[in-house]
Length: 209
Image 1: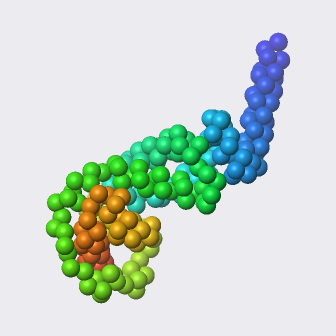
Image 2: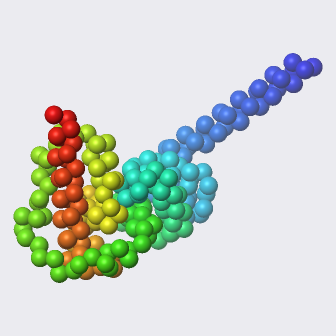
Image 3: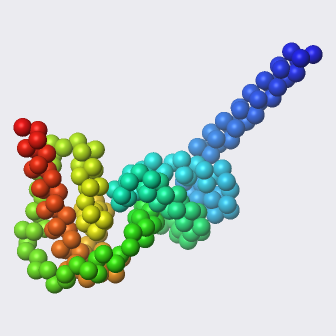
């Protein structure tokens, strides 16, 4: 009798497992539009699939803005809560991943106080050569991890503006509006970030020799 119960339990476990895999495969077959519409209806399995599809890449975005891995994970969780709360606002125009990314970036920005920018001296006079102080050749020999480590070591203000301008492609006027600062402050922070990165890279090169 005991053996029959064990076999039946194993059968039930296998049946449930097969059913779960089947449901998972069904969600993997759904188009992005179908998944979004299911998430609008607050379908948990669809929400889980969206998270599975995009969380890896979005964690990479979080890591660029965060001070550490724990902060990055907090930002990711907060961002996806906002994604599912606001998903009904997605208009099916443009990239869904881009829409998620924007929420992730904004969540990261709100993680850190912008008061540090207000203490920066505005009216910094930019020169054309300052925008390209850090040439690609200066860091082309670095691995992606080495470069990310250097960026993550920048002070919060430098790191955030460097990411927004260099990685995300925002202009200084847009960054100023996002952070509630002057465009000149954004420019000066970017120059300081690039100068610090260049010094760190030179130091690494000296150590390697």
